Length: 316
Length: 279
Image 1 (cartoon, chains in turn purple, blue):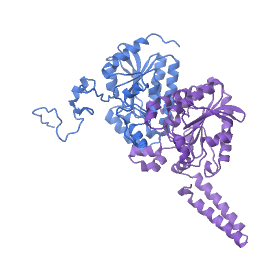
Image 2 (tube, chains in turn red, green):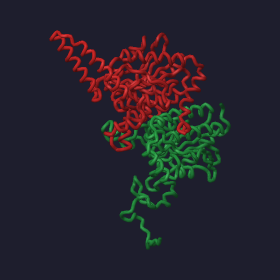
Image 3 (cartoon, rainbow over the protein chains, first blue to last red):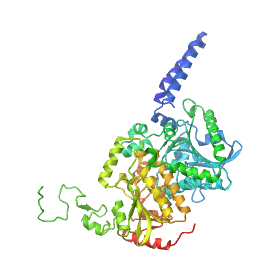
Image 4 (cartoon, each protein chain N blue to C red):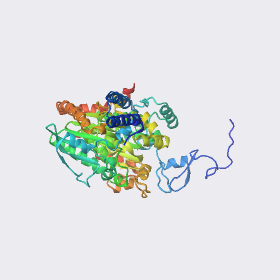
């Protein structure tokens, strides 16, 4: 699947392919022209992907082939063992959790799970969690605390699921408790925003010592479509909303709301999942080393301070 | 200007005149009442029990002992993090229409002689939404209440995070939750009263972290708004869904308390927690 803004790249790549097959057929040497075009394609890619608009980034963040949590679990961790259930009512397939080893260190992994296609997405509810998901997450965080394991959370959700059952079973309460619990967890927590981080349903996993974001990930108070629908009564103006809302990793880093932007392979993580995982793993290890070196008391004070400082003074 | 005195008073509204000009019609039973009359009943319809929304000042007035209120941070002005002109306009209009600086008033006062810290949100101010300043005032109320060792009562009324302030408003959820945690560690009492409406980022943060959670009858309480849910699941929602009574039935809140009973109930709970908290 490709997007409009990638059209010039595709056209160039088609021309290269055509030229290559022509050269093979006619047995003539066109390598100079081909290399020239390849270099141009590379330039073009760099240019296009470094100047993506927020809306274009949103499209990449939602790309169906973008590596999801399950992909990163297998690429980054070993000995992963999935743990199920909230010990209250059920197990939420939109939240994946378990214990694993990250570069020889036992960790707890928790995050939203999106699918790559409709079948997978139906199974995991498009990464939209129910209260059971937030309760499972909190349960696993407390378990990690008991065994002094760092927690790594992965955020990739359009938002918490807005449904009858979710409301009946206390969606708001479950999110509030997950958030409050995470803020005082006596073990290091690192959050990574992988794709889409939408609303309170995303923030519930982001009350961390470090918040990292992939280059093309977005993080927003509400989806741009919903923003447009609520403020302008027109969900079709999502693109315009995205441009206004300051949702890109680069914007949020400039506001110091996140700690680091993790680079992605050219064109987005879906173009090369292995490379995306390598870059992510490198950043994770660095931050883990930093936070695990701090005394817990100081870690907790800093975690609370990072949110406390978001006061009106910031804007004066 | 000369004003023509009406020769007789009409109970039903004159044709063509807007509701709000001295009268209102009960949204539930359709009964029409003049404003002064409704106030006598604490803005609860005497016929059907419908609870009209209260502004923050009205709320404090009917809850706190007369003359006991002392406001905190009353001079804090809203911020406009992205300098958006449309938002600046909206804020100015909200301030003009509500007579408030922001969507929450905080301070301290007395409830039947019990000294408390209190916060009252106002749904007339951009639907009581929580931006940086609302988050800050709630956080400061928690911090100051802890310093003064006072219990805190929060009257929630909010549609959720203030969208115009983007991720800054989203982060206020984490900020207020951290403040509630710190307050709880002091062993102090936090009573959260959910009023119509309490949804979104407010319900999913400090509103649902009270030691005791009360709600007014018929108040809309939830995470997602009913319209969003209907659009998502494409079916009509059941009668009474997300109302206070529904939440009570599902174990999400401690009690539904009619407005006329709220002050005595708060006083009783406060009395049961009186005395120095053990830390």
